[in-house]
Image (cartoon, rainbow, N blue to C red):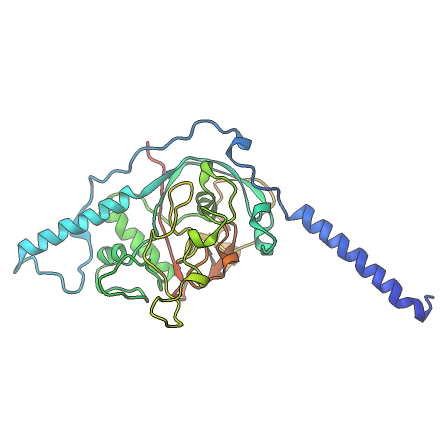
Length: 330
């Protein structure tokens, strides 16, 4: 039997042993190396892809916005407005950035720092086919002209519809995408989580940064520390898209502004390598979807390229928006 005066010594030694054992195990199981970049996975020439087709836009399928002129009583004003809206749709298509497919390490690689969450920490190799992703988050303007009605964003500035749309249910995001596809004849979708992270890191052009586009978050993100309104109030607020610096692919606001919804259910990462992962299937019982990138309401650690968050699909959030992807075309 251990004498009472030695019990605390034994317990202390046991706790130290367990602490070191757990730390070693965590390092071995979860913490990856610094993401090695494209050359590690073979490198080679990077394709820029081909532009998406803008010739099939049907503006007659766009929603009717409150206050629009009537086609019967003021046809000239109506047709002028439709041409303006067609130009907005054309720009949205032109702003789809080609992401040449490749491999990367997904999750809490070493350059992501020490404040990573356990759900980031099964670092694993992912290989993706090529795709397109939008340069900007979906704006209030784009959402409004596709869906019609009135501006559904929570943050309204007179004369400015370039703030990203927020406050949408998951179903409403997909309804918007379905209608945009009908208008354009294209195949837009929400990104998978792997597509989002690969693009946020810079795709095959990545340079191993903590945040999408920089190691200095203030240059790329609208987040808690810099999202105060400039009128001396204490209110935090998102900003118009594209005001920070882009990442290596030319994408804006992958960090901050709005958290961005992905199509995956939120679940722990696998350990094994994956090819074009889609996340868990619908029948696996998960109840929240992935969102990424942090927002105007987030602290810096939530804006890292590997940081993960979740949201309830049937709930509205003033800090959650989305951007689009499109499959590769030949």
